[in-house]
Amino acid sequence: MLITKTNYSSCRLSALTKLQGGIMFDKKDDNSNSTPDVFRPAKGSAKVVIGHGVTINGEIKKADEVQIDGEADVTMKTDNVVIGATGDCKGNIETHNADIWGKFDGEIKASGTLTIQEQGVASGDIEYQNLQIKLGGQISGDIKKSDKIQPIKKDSKPSEENNSLQEAIKKD
Image (cartoon, rainbow, N blue to C red; front, top):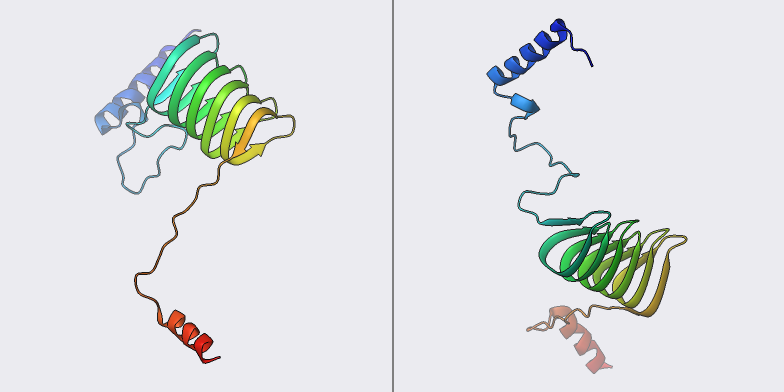
């Protein structure tokens, strides 16, 4: 590609203008009113990506999000896991949300939502809070819906409504 002197000068002038203005590389001023970029992980978040063609065996700890596009035989505890269309995962996973586009075989516990996409295949010991299976998705094995039992809140003092109801029953 041939760059003319005019284009080079205008690029250099544009970069110099940005440098002098304090906004090099199109950085925006830090406004408290600005919204965060939803496609970029928050600062300090721990994301693990196992790319296509990569094979991994082991344990993943303290990850906020794990994406598997390669082959993995892992034990992990994470907030969110995505097994991509080229992903082939075996092992034990404890997560809040799981999104399966590829293959999973093993034990998975999803305390939030387990989603099996159109080409996704999940097999093994599967426990979930909410389940979503897209048309074409497959699930097999020991499948269990996990019901979280909420503690029953007991009032230390009976309310006046309860007293009046109890009094009404006694009067009859």
